[in-house]
Length: 65
Image (tube, rainbow, N blue to C red):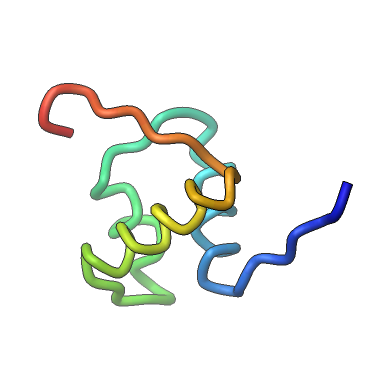
């Protein structure tokens, strides 16, 4: 199996998710990465989409969230 290397921004999202230890709401990233990044919602969604495409995570919608 070939190991995949993540760009730094995607790695930071993954670390934040690992530390959450479960499903997270969208505003979790605002709180978790506030001191180091001021990413817009669209940037975070793009990073999450890339990680999903690379099969590092899966997403599940609950209601309108």
